[in-house]
Each structure stands twice: as C-alpha cells, then as structure tokens.
Image (tube, rainbow, N blue to C red; front, side, top):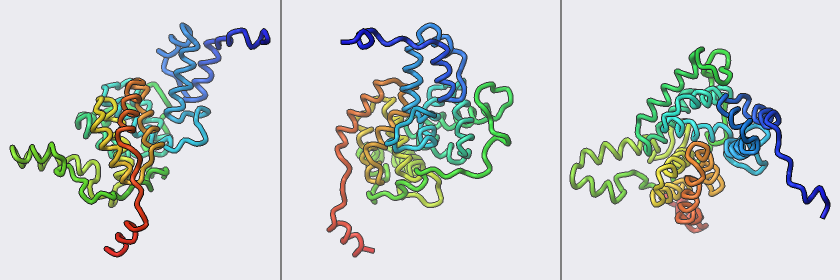
Length: 290
C-alpha cells in the first residue's frame, strides 16, 4: 500500500468549504461560518449532503428526477411549520429567482397544511412578506420582487389526474366514524383536505394532485406517521408518481427534520409496496367506459 493511500484524507480548510458552499447556494448564513471554522469537514458534509437533497448548484446527480423548484416547494413550508422565520425568507427569494409565483408557493403551503395545520399557510405568507422587505439581509431578491409570470417546471405537468375515483377523505374509516358522531364536522374537515389535495383531480390549479401528495408524504415523515405516510405514497403512485420521486420528496425535508424522518419515510415506502400497474385489460375496460 502506498504512503499516499495509507495516509488519512487531508481535512479541507475553512476557506475551501466556505467557497464551495457559496458556489452551491449563492450565499451563507453567518452562523454556518462558526461551524466551518470549528469543524470544516462537518460543514463540508452539510454542504454536499444538503446540496444533493435540495439540488444546489454543483451538487446534483444526473439521474435525479424532482426539479429544484419542487424541492423548494416542499422545504419552505417545512421550515415555516417549524417557525423558522430566519431561514425561510431566503428560500422564498430563491424560489423567486427560479421564477415561482406566490400562487404556486401558497398551493404547496396548503397541501403541507393538511398535516401541520393552516397556521403553516399563515407562516408562509409571513415569510413572503419578510422576503419582500428590504430589511431582510439574506439572499438576493430579484428586481421587482415576485415574478410576474410563473416559469414552468416539470412537475406542473405531472400527476394531474387520480386513478382512484374515490379519493375523498370521507371514505376513510376515521372520517366515516367521525360522521356518526358529528356529520357536519366530518364533512367540513374532509372538505378542507379534499380541496387542498384535489380529490377530484386538477382543473385550473398549478400543482396537480400527484405533486401535492409528494408534499404530504414529506410532511407526514416529520410526524412519524408511517401508516398514513404509506397511504399517501399509494395515493401518489395512483397519480402516476414513482418511487424515485417519492424518495426525493422525502429527502427535501431532511435538512430541517433529520435523517430519522427519511428512515421513517423509507419504512413507509416499503409498507406501501410498488406502484400499481394498469393491465392491458384494465386499459381496454377504461376506454370502453369512455
């Protein structure tokens, strides 16, 4: 074995890892500089690992499937659900630079809120106001603020129809039980979820039910709800989403909720099983019904 192979890898300098992080993200919060100087290798791993999860410049893989905008639409409400009003406006500014409008950001927030509560929607609205404020010091705000038009990204055309015609929440055993106690409560609660997750499929909404289910799957992983997560993974599959997209959605919340959330998500993926494949006979039957 050569002396070079036997020697441990040289730890990068703080300046090297800060330069790499700046190139990936475009900016750095000052608190991360404390870590970079105290433990450069640790911060370098944060940059490389988190950069892969969020699709930062120079850290992506050629075979990754979810777009950068979709990852941000998952990560930002996750930050807001935790009350992280320092970092979340920076993500809003990044989404603005990607060409995302408030409308699509709020659609994602509404989907996430079915797990975390609609205070998340209000929190997203608050961080949008912070992002637009000249007093917020982090990240570059595009000239003019919010983009006037949405820049298309792939997920806008994915998962716009549901294969399951009975995707409404009132069909779930829990809400059927609730109906026997307070039918109006069950109707209104289920109606809210059905509105946010597009139980009947997309019409003029920007995000279809498939991407919204990915958001819910990620949100449920932060709550440790393996059975419910598996259920919504199956719903995502029924909208045409695939396991790679599900896993990448789950990875988008790791930086703010930890690797345990990903492990719980993987348990849910195993529980959910593989996506259903429509057989040729089923396809012919569906054409006859039309």
